[in-house]
Length: 242
Image (cartoon, rainbow, N blue to C red; front, side, top):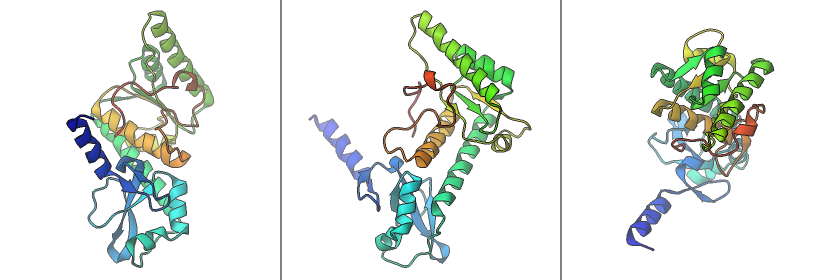
């Protein structure tokens, strides 16, 4: 192994943290960090920036639930700490808020379009980096967006181009999308490429992994969206998630 490769391998290994449930060493992005906050209350540290000794748990609701049940936080910290019985749900809510804030940032950067007509056009042209469909929106709208995505894929295939898979996000309710975009009646939205778009998609992927207990890769399509699944079976184009 070349010296440079050896140094990089050692650096990656040094950054790994151990899950208190499985005792497996994982990269920080595959885990959730927790610290002891004021009043000896355990708090999630999604950004991995809070001061204090961190306790790490695998990126899944099941793992967090097991950590609570087994009192793994107290054992790891070697001190009494207040741990919420609904910690997994609280982490989920924080991750949703984090993703919605990231979507708001993408909107401020001018990377988000809403309205069925605009979204369908972006999906059909292949210009979208991601499509959003409200989880409580009509199934007919989701079906039509899926058809537009498949048309775009077929056009690329006929031209001899490599398929460009567009992730479909369908885990946020219309009310959450309205909050992020600052407008009413948001059922469909599309994001075009840009750093803020990747920031949102990174948070969405982590949230899906947390909910589905996927310890492998990051899903590119959430389980609620089936109509467009046929054309989104490989990793999406563009930079990988953080």
